[in-house]
Picture 1 (cartoon, rainbow, N blue to C red):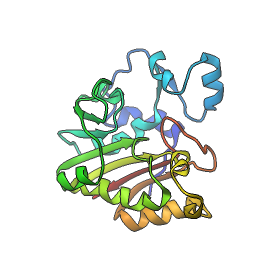
Picture 2: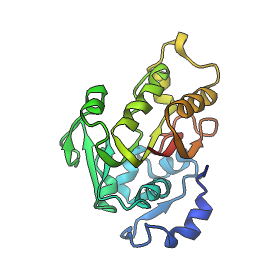
Picture 3: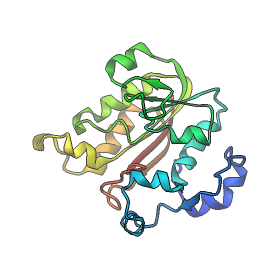
Picture 4: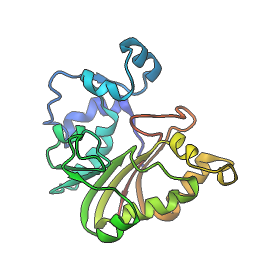
Length: 216
């Protein structure tokens, strides 16, 4: 199983599928920098960083795993302003809001999963599907995996702080990291990357503190 290493990624990016991507002079932000320091220095919100051409390289490392399989299209569920399509045109952004730059207005839920079973070769979702209770986490993974074709690949992240907000006290895991890993292992067959930053960053707005890449 692989894990994100920002220093190594910076050295090897020219050897990845991302080598021809132009960042148009944006400032590259290393996610090991404290978010609070960065936010305070610009006096803006976390999401506001996107307007200041400050690009976090971490998601691209995970997206590169999707590109390795040379998909014709990558579905981005909960794409927000569809930022990643700017750099990777094969991304097709789906979001419940139609006025944020998405390619398609739709919401991911049980019906969406059932109606698109085994349909997409490559799917990603960054901090968009975590508005659920911990008790529903395993089912969310299963429904996300369901829409990917056999031999396809998925990339998904969750911010544990959001799940805590949607979880009743009686359903709160004693050890969050152990619970999340157990449910992940139970509901996904071939996990390629599993990064847990829960202890280091309890509330990770942009990239999530649980990050997973898997093969269907």
